Every structure is written in C-alpha cells, then in structure tokens.
Image (cartoon, rainbow, N blue to C red; front, side, top):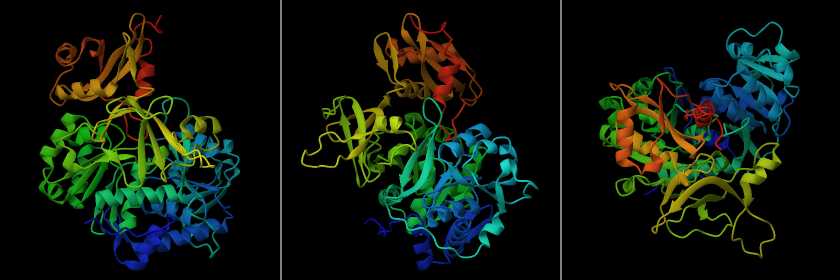
Length: 534
C-alpha cells in the first residue's frame, strides 16, 4: 500500500506543515548537528521577514551561492515564503559564470559567504539589479563590493516581522540554470505547482515515509538534487547534507547516518560501484535512484551485487519537466536497459517530426506533457519557443493551446509501453551514413572492464563525416591499452560503431551537475583529424 501523500500547494508549506505535525522530528543533519522541523520552520519564517524588510518585491530573485548547510536550505524556502523566487547557484561555478546568472535573471539579493563574496568582488559591479548582499558566516568586507548594501545573516534573521507577498501555485518558485550543450546556461523557470507535483509524484513511487533518511550529495542547483529536499520534506523525512570530495566519503556517510535513500548520476555510481559497502550501509539503504544519463549495465550489475537488499530505481528527467519516467525495480531483471514508463501525473509521448505518434519500436522524440512542464526559459523567448511547443494531437475544440516539452531526446517505446533511451539529438554521431548513439558505444566500453570512465563523441573527419572517438580513464588496476580496448569493441560492435581513436586521461571533466562534460570534450578534440569534414 502506498503511503498517504498530503496535498500542499506551495513549496514552503512542506516545512511548515511538517513542523505543525512533528515539530521535534529531525529535518536536516549536517556535520554531526541536526535541525528539527520546528527549528527549520522558525528559520525560514525569519528569513522571509528579513527579506521582506529589505523591500524584496513580489517574484524578485534571490540567489543563493553557498555550500550545503542549514542556512542554504533556510534561504531557499525563506525566499519562497516571502513571495520571492530563489536561484540556487552551483558552488563549482566561477565568478564570471555566477555573474552571468545574476545578470541574466536580474537577481535583487545575493546570499553568500564572506569567502565566496571575495571571489565575486571583481564582477558584482556588472550586476546593476543586485542591490543587497547577505553574508553568512565569517567577517564581512568593511566596504561592500560594487557599491551594494550589505547585511549579515544574523541581521537578516533579527529583522522585524514584515508581511509577505501573496503567492499561488502557478507563480514562479525557482529558476534553475542548466548547463546546456552550447552557449551560456539557460534559466528554467519552475512554478510552485511544478515543484510540488514533482515532489508528490516521486515520493509516491519511491514510497517515501517519515522514517526515511536521505543523503543529499548532488548540487541543489540541479533539479534532481533539489528534489531530495522536497520529497523528504513532503513526508516529514530527514535529509543529511553533504558536499563530498571522494566517492568513498559518500559510502562512509551512508553507513554512519544509516541512510535509506541515495540519489546519484552515472559518473558517481560508476565510482561507488567500485567501492566496498560496509554492512551498516547495505542494511539501511532501502533504495538508490539514477538520473542524468543512462547507467551502464556493468555498473548496475556491480551495484546490485554489492547491495542485494537495495531497490534500484532507474529514472529519466530533464530540468524543463523535472522528472518524466521511472523503471520499477521489479522490472530491472526483465528490461535493465529501459527507462520505464511515465511517472504519476505525467504523460510521455513518442512522436515523429510532424508530431504524429510513433509505432512500437520506432525511434522518435520524447514529448512530456502535464503539470510538471516548466514556465519556459527566463527572458529567452526564442529558446523557449524551440523547446516548449504545442502538444500534438490536441482536441480542436480546445481554444487555449496546451504546451508540452519537446525534449530533443530520441527514444523508442516497445509493445508493452516501456521506453528506451537512444540518444540526444545533439549528441548523436553521424558516421559513414549511420547515426550512432554514444550511449550504445559506452555500454560496450564499460562492459569490457578496461575503463573506469568513458565518453564517446563525434569528431569531424574528412572521409567519414564524423568519427567515433572515445575519451577514457583506465579501470582500477588496469593500464591504458587502446589496442586491447578496440579489439573488444570490434568483437562487440558493428564496424561503423568501432571507435577510430581512444584518448586516455587520468580523469574526465564534468559539468557543475556532475555529468561528464561532452561539449567540452568534443571541442577539445575538434582538430584531431584536421578540422572540419569535407
């Protein structure tokens, strides 16, 4: 029987309602300390009063550039409670990238640390809409950089009570910046309805309960990372906050905190699959989830062997629609390569370029419709129109057009309705007249056991159009042996899919969300075969 999921409308209600029901229950854990729901509710109310007293306008943006800690969570939900829009900024971003976000969505208030502020001092003058800096911890600069107003976190919390703006569920709640495949990051605008629907849907199929203890290791600027907070708070569960350096640290923390749910992306799972899991972690970990890319079969097999009592949920999502599909654990043995079916309260279509539905096993574009569809890209009507388009096959009697997210991802649906990822439209490799999925090549690479990390990209080639090129890191205890790797590829792949070149590295670059940085690798290898194809 699925757990009862309460019906809330606005994001801060997740904390306020849980505090009203179980004020003494632990909401957050961080570095050996804990915060109850009652304490967290009081903190977000004080943040909301502080921001309102600063004159924060309705739907004005509040950027939060902090590591995972209690103040970070209070800042997100406090800004939302005040009627503002919070903007999580990834801690891996550099000053120019942060400045782009601050300018792009006209941030009014920036909440950050004194240390991070010093790194931004040279760019804040380029952010004219930014009026106030809130400093968390440490000594604030004597003179605020860029001529901004400056207050400490304590001063913000001690501000007098001030009324918040009225907000309803279709109003903006957050702007999350996606790395994208080209150009500068785009701000995806999410409503309270988007985020609440996502929390309810995910908590439903993961069967989250108040006794759950989730470990938050992904960045909160990543919708998948932020959902660890929203799904936990929906049911009154607790979240342990962690910014990790080594994969081993994640396992140690999972054992120490008796974690029941852990979310990761493929590169992290590849590292965790190589580790030894202590009994404490194996006994407590009820489920793991994967999104942000296809988990290699070899990695999944190793994880299942290491965690025999843990249920794996393989998921697919995109920031523009939060989450789209999941594969129930009981289907993993039958179809481990599937991304499952639509999550609750969403519909997933597979369509041809003209919008007509694809037949069974016919590749097509994944289109997501429903309450999870975001409000578009901030201040970018052109890119919004490219991705958010009318739902195909609508009843002509409907006067208002429903918009859906056209993902740009190629998938197929089998006769039983299960979906399978083929590749990104902008990552597919066109070689010798064939379209090659990098994911399919990477699956074979991992199955050889010779690589720890691997990315396949298309590089311009004078004869082939594009050549399949692999950038890889050798597996633990293995040496970089291109011939051995290519020999196995020739044994497992058709000729046109066999990589033409392997480049070995100690580690592969990642984007701020922890995924392998494919665009960067493709750019670095652009001249490998002499430049553009003829």
